[in-house]
Length: 459
Image 1 (tube, one colour):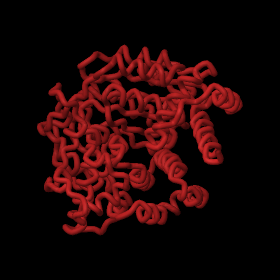
Image 2 (tube, helix red, strand yellow; image 1 turned 120 degrees about the vertical axis):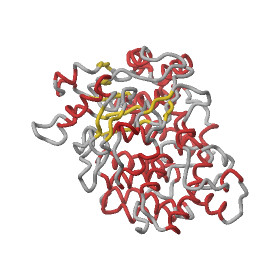
Image 3 (cartoon, helix red, strand yellow; image 1 turned 90 degrees about the vertical axis):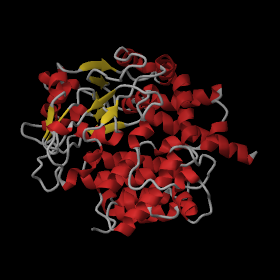
Image 4 (tube, one colour; image 1 turned 90 degrees about the horizontal axis):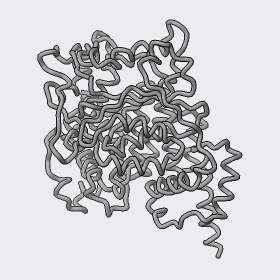
């Protein structure tokens, strides 16, 4: 048995948001570096600014691609969860449950963590949408008896049905990804995979496609070709499966990564497994079962995290992986090949799990700025779709989408008036100078709204 070591589990035990922030900042300071750590401290007093800074910190940590950085990224992601907005828990809870199930804790620590995590699951299911306090304070209040909520207090032993939490309400098709007849005994590192061993996992089916397409067309007016291409792969009520696709734009900041996450949510996929091609560690296909820190392949981990048979694996900046011959990053291009062909993916032998997996229903969408850097054998297996940079004519729709994003992050923004024509004119000039980057547009609109608030307070 070990003490609490995973930063996300340590964070889970905090009783207040401020306490969690302080403990996590201390744990992360060396990894983040002095500059990033100081930015977090500088913005800690501004609720909206610190949430934005935390999200940027999470992205930066995931880009590093190391095990330690990934654990810290999960812990920092917990700081963005709000009971008043249950979807904010979506990307955190499965990974947090996985971390707890994989930890070898004492009985007391394990029980304390599971009590709190049950309350987080209840908050993610929408049981506490009227609560304004953080999930840390909420969990402390429930455990202290200050809040009576039967669904959060009912004992679930050691199991949480993650698949049920993600599954569509209607009964649909399933797939046994990890049949017991093709598996060997799992070692201690891969113990969490016992939850999907010989289990029929749901295949998430596409739903509300017409509505989703209209919403995405309004949100990404410059990406009409990508929307058309991806939606050609989908059929209403049938399992979601995309052709392997690379979204290409010559300029960064066109919103490709955000587009992938949005299309997944719009059609019913609640989990996107992101892999950073720029800092990949050469372990996309997993590591040998004989290694002391063996790890399953990325697609297998995506299945476990989503508890579905057709997860979406999102590889960001695929073109950045093409290093010289023999480089670890360069090996990603060859590691991808068996997953892209249905025949080989259907009976993929994962070297860490030592099991033959059926990964034929997994989808792969990548982003890149220059596909000429990729080898021919990889380009031949992907559909390449160009995503042009947004234009000034797209500004009204894009600005409206950014306003909706800000309202999701901060409920107080839900009542903001639409941007006025004169405000849009000022935003357009600033955005043009910024090179039409969607990242810069978000910052410009946020600054515009803050200036509007300051003006209203003076008058």
